[in-house]
Length: 443
Ligand code: NDP
Ligand code: 2IT
Image (cartoon, rainbow, N blue to C red):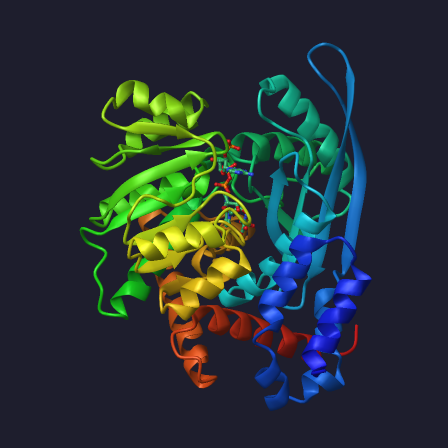
């Protein structure tokens, strides 16, 4: 058995039942054989085992009172995975499916994603099984205050800087920030994704979706394809999906679908993004409300199976949402490119089909790194008490995304895996973190 496979078996046995974490580790490991051969130091310093073990995992109780006066209990997490290249950095997810495996897969991926940005940020992730759906603002505030009352012990602007993810947007970040400030009596850039009027960064809200499209545009351009007039299917209708759709439309593409966990909309005339924003961001309603206004669009309840023909597919909802069956639908309908806006949205079987069929594939670690990149810009603005304009941040974001593409493309070629951007991202991210760990000694 190869060194890598032995280590993979060991890591799986040490972390039983954490299937999403196993999946994320396997994705990185499948490309590490030649990397270890080329750099024997990684073996000597046992980087493989060290990089898979979080520096620290914090798990805590959150008690809070709902609007009926009942005491509710949820579970909170913060996985501080690796700080070899900077303070732990990564989002908080509030969703009933949150568990140790989900937190660890997200934290593990974040380490390599953050390395690819070229910015000084380590990787972490956190969250809770709290479900914000249907909760009043007062309930969300009460929960966030209780959550922060434990979390504040473990974070800080030079230690660990959380942000948003599924179920955590500017509103939740505001409640969390207010409580941190009260407990610490310090005004620090300890969270990113804040509102603009108290230390937030212009273009952070747009950054993941816009960044995804800058990445896709670059990937297509390097393969002599234009985004203009292409059809795009998007899943999700949250922060990432909305701004991916907005930028796709502004770059001349036509977006056909969006979805939520209840169903999906198909608008053959092209999605009206202002209407989606009105329904989802302002009214906080379900996506099916869209067809009440756009009567030519259709709503289908149930899981979106990527059965609408398109040139480009952008899964922007959640992990493992695009499976083998969906990938076969996309292939049958002649898809050209797939890029992951969500974290790990494509199953390994789906990815294999894309790579085997020479579909341009943008892996999450690279393609959705725009959000955390602008978070790092927010951190630096907070440190120097400075504010950049939207245009300045947007132009930095564009630059970062094209540098990421260039880096992973070059590394894929170096390892004779030309145009396998998944390999390029995993290898480039791993090498950067591994080298920093070795330089800092056995800690
Ligand atoms: P939001 O909470 O804003 O939106 C999530 C969207 O995905 C909603 O439309 C939601 O539908 C849908 N969704 C969530 N869970 C499921 C599910 N189990 N099945 C089907 N649909 C689901 O989150 P974000 O847009 O911020 O995050 C989306 C993805 O992007 C996540 O994978 C996240 O980790 C990733 N990401 C986010 C970044 C950010 O900056 N926010 C940065 C990089 C990656 P419903 O309302 O019905 O739950
Ligand atoms: O998955 C991600 O990169 C995020 N949720 C954003 C993390 C951040 O710190 O901005």
